Length: 139
Image 1 (cartoon, helix red, strand yellow):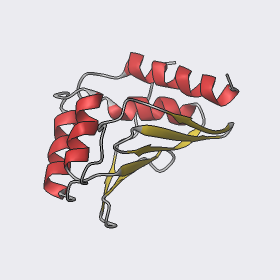
Image 2 (cartoon, rainbow, N blue to C red):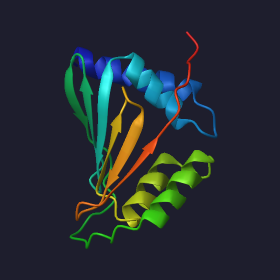
Image 3 (cartoon, rainbow, N blue to C red):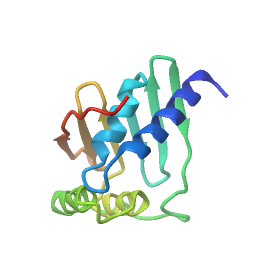
Image 4 (cartoon, rainbow, N blue to C red):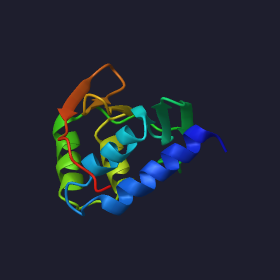
């Protein structure tokens, strides 16, 4: 296992340990940022997660949202925002969040951990950007 993989796995665990039930994403993002992760990109529906770090780039596979050839849902910003707010309110699990944004036509999203924003992309070049707040993690 590489140093980058170890750093990411430890940061994810730290973020999970310190995130509240409601509004928890910034805590996970901050744990990754503190560990030297600069960008985290999720590719849907295959659910591959790319991490750009100061120690190198790493990709993590996760269970796919689909198992056969599938039409991509049309980009729907209103559905995307509903999915974001439900997740921010603690009403969905992470797999449910991924399914909801896929259903809103999102094929990938990129988290800029240094500038603290996320951009969600549709298949025809559509995008939606949302900033998230800075938080402080316990030492």
